[in-house]
Length: 213
Image (tube, rainbow, N blue to C red; front, side, top):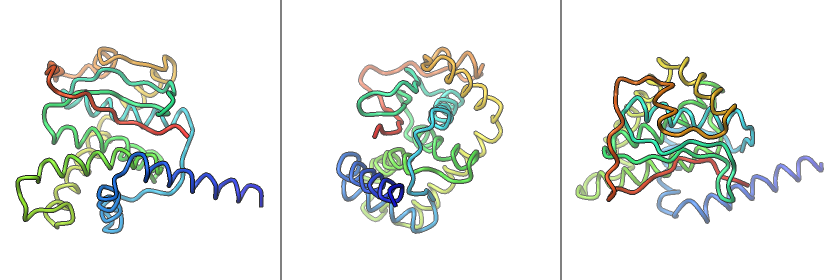
């Protein structure tokens, strides 16, 4: 009974943190719509595993490196807000969608299911979908066109990580040992033929992250 109460309290805390801190009501509703449509599937559990956090973040970093996205750093050293994160700057919103989806995709590849922590990344995908469709009033994130588009993005991201699983494992091990990797570290390990795009100082840095509870 004690364990059940602890689990219930944790779930309520997680839900409250995500809804009040990370998700606007609109973003929350769209993400749930996509989940109910079968596009995204995640479980209502939170993992504090350092290894899982490393796998999640290195998936973001690997996708970024393969796509030529500029990476600032990736770390599993917890902060007051985040359990772990990768910080990057993107030019192409389609690349950004794949980078944000990579953590979710990696958890599905490795564990067969994604944790609730991946929701922050999915919320970022919602925001980018809004930006891409802001000039098209007839196209909403619930439309079949957007759902098909995101399904293709997720499929491509999953394929990218599956084809480079050895690099994902190598990056994960390196991050577990060093705790923090610079963008140069990631590119050196990946040895990508795609050079990172020089960050535009007018562009905003973005972070794909897992929350700290």
